[in-house]
Amino acid sequence: METALRKPGSGEYQSARQEIGPILEGFVYFRYVRRTLHIVTSKLLHKTGFRRLPAAACLAMCMGFFPVGVDGKPASTSSLPSIAILDLVDMVDNQRRGMVTDMIRKLVVESGRWDLFPADSAARKLREFNFNPALACNAPQCSFDAGNILQVQYVLFGTVAALDKYNSFTLKLLHVPSAQVVWTDVGESKTDILMERSPLLAQAFQASIKKLSPQVSERSDGTAKTTLAVLDLSQPSIQSRVLHERVSTYIYRNQHYQVMDQGEQAELLKALEINKYSVVPSNDNMINLGEKLGVGQLLYFRLYKQESEFIYLLSHYDVERKEQILQMPAQPSVEVSSLFTYERDFFDALNAKTGKKGAVAGSKKAQSLGKANSALWVSLAVLGLGGGVAAYWSLNGEEEKPGWDPGAPPLPPPDIAK
Image 1 (cartoon, rainbow, N blue to C red):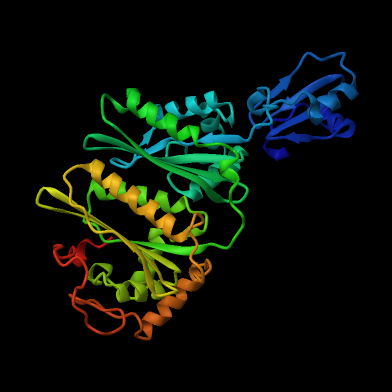
Image 2 (image 1 turned 120 degrees about the vertical axis):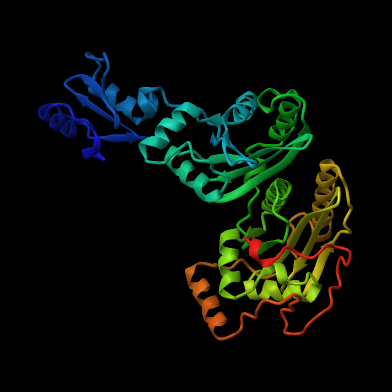
């Protein structure tokens, strides 16, 4: 770090090292030289007016009695947990919605339960570490990276989208030291005016932030997680993107599930030569697919439109116990609000059936599905264990008749598979 700093004269610099040495407070260095306190950051050298201040007093200041923060500003002495809030990502165009996020930042400050890292200071600091704050971030990994740079305990991130007559949003709270999502919420409001000025959306945000507290965020008990894959067989649309995000957020709410990344899932399916759109959604097929993906739980997700109505299907499987946990009959609707109600009822019923913790007895523990496992799946595919593509394809090698949702239209053709 020392070579990255703009140093004073060599005499002063050596004298400073000999007298008290550098003490790091965040990303600020303190040096006492010839009765003058020098505060050195990565950008510039500040000289305070403490010319008659004894060295002992300066040392006390360096030790934190009078802490100085980033960019020479006073550092927070708050005992509240520190939090940074990243701009929400619009699911329609994948752009950041800073003005909408400012509504949440204001509510977090007003709650009096968090020490918020200012957005403008966060952007400057992220740029210093070559982290582009202009990039949309709605994933634990980039949130974790930002949290490490900002040296905060928590990072709040999520999405927002205007969907027909509603504004939908998702929120996730990442605990940086454990790299775990420890709190989530899903909400919506009716569309009245521009999203940035919507009082109805502000009310929905307020109801959500009221549920966000340090006590709620500390409920992870360190138990090994069950890996869960979301099998999305929806027709590509804005509605399916928004609802998939909402479903994923509901799953993150359960502390005992580790959600398989969609990109990783796509790689495994490709290695196994499985076209997910050609898999008949029967119980046996879903269980067998989950086994091949190496997950303990599998959630079937599908949204499609039939004439003027949306058809929404959700089904949850315990792969290890080889049973379907929950399936709710589809409820065709022309209103998006009915889709929100359907998914909320589904996850309420799922939590009631599996218990508050959501863990089913005997379920498989979380597995690491990194490059080593991907290589294993590639080897299995080369050996001919990956199956193939067919109009109706059964994962156990036997052809089956479509026994579920017989009135549904054919699945999308393979060429639009994600």
